[in-house]
Image 1 (tube, rainbow, N blue to C red):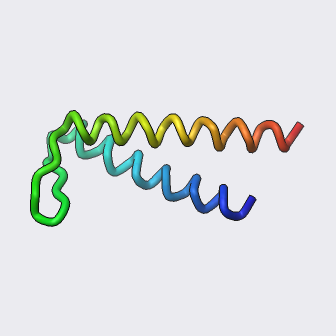
Image 2 (spheres, rainbow, N blue to C red):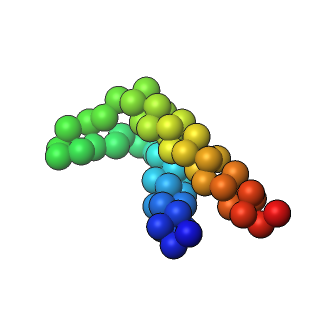
Length: 63
């Protein structure tokens, strides 16, 4: 579960970063090159999907 806990924290950080960039109208860059907002939104969606899988696993283990 430690690995899932670490992945959970990493995903939360990435989701927060992506959301704040989109909501604030910021430009995300990687290696000095601008990343289109549509690509940032796709990344946010994929990370949120994975986060839901981890939360489901946590819930299943608590039952």
